[in-house]
Each structure stands twice: as C-alpha cells, then as structure tokens.
Image (cartoon, rainbow, N blue to C red; front, side, top):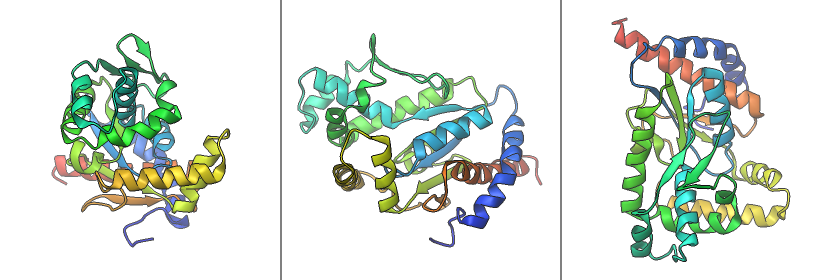
Length: 262
C-alpha cells in the first residue's frame, strides 16, 4: 500500500464518519450547474461497479457504468456475425450502434436499439469479446464522446462514472478522481463469488487474462498524478463505500473552498 492510499483500517474509520458530510457537500452544488463528476477507475474484481453504484445512491447522484458500452458494442458486433478481432469490421458496426443506458443506480438497464441487453452483455461470449472491441482507438474516441454527452445531459447534481480510463481520458478534470484497487487474489475471490456457476480457478484465470489484455490498451493499475488510491484489499463493502465517500467529501469541499476564495 502506498502513502497515497487512504483505505487502511484507520482511513476506513475516518471515512465512515465523513460519509454524511460528503452527501451534504454534494447537495451544495448550485442548481443548474454542470453535474459534478466523480471519476473512478479500477481493475476487474476491485468492486468499482457495486461500490460506485452505492456511492451514487448515497449522494443522490447518477451512476454511469462505462464498461457496459463496450460490452454492448461487443454484443452488437457478435449479433452481426462480426469477428471482434477485426478492427475494420468493428468500426463498420459502430455506425449502427444505437446505444442507451440508464444513469439511475436503482433502475439500471442497457439497450441497443429496441433490445434490452442488460443481462446479455454479461454473458461469457461477450466478456471474451470486449477487449477486442475496446482496443480500437476510434471506438474508444467515439464511446468517450458518448460518455461525456451522457454526463452533460444528466439532470442530477452529479454523476459517479466508473471504468478503466475515466480519471485520465474521459474526465481528467473531475474534482474527485479515484483508483479503486485490491490485491489480485482478493479480486479473483470476489469475482468467483459473483459467478457461482463457474469454477474458481477458471474465473481467476479469466480475470488475469482480461487484466493483461486491457492493460495493453490503458493503464488502469497505476494512479495518475492527482488520483487518490483506495485499496479495498482489507475492507468489506460498506467500509469501501465509506472510504470512497471520504475522498469525495474532501475533494468536493476543496473545490467549494476554491470557488468561494477560501
């Protein structure tokens, strides 16, 4: 754990006391202002999706799962019989990619055209195809523009945005940027617990393969300058949520103070 990591046992305790203050600070954002962006990156199994969704609930913010867009595009490509390792073919179907996603953390859905693909994009065949889609630079540029448009169109005071390059590419100027991580063996165990129908060793191997593939596209294991690390290796779910809320409280308070000249 580095000296920039706040999620040790004492940090979790301090963050727990700060969670209500974080919500209060978030509520201070003036009506009509652009949504506050909370950018959260992290590897598979770090808990970033479930933690980000709960943080959004606690703050009354929107929640944007950016990985869902790449999964939905992979599903779309597979439905069209496209080999996702072929960048040119992926770009061809990108032009017909009619994508929509809910930013409501309590009513989450993903659609491509008229098809509800919320469950389908989690199928193993889609998971295996995601990296091929996400590695295409033109795809990432197009999808990142989509993310920014979704954030700007939100009618909530803020949006918690989670993914792989949110802190560095999608929202590098966000007032709060967090890298949520955990030890590899802990991440593998968590993912295995989620996928109860699959062998634990197979799940761990798949996670490591996905990390290796995705790391070739974007560095999501190293915090960029100005990004706070939250290491959840020794934290349970609620402790991790509280730790993230503590970082948000500090970041939003600092932004508010700078705006007010304090």
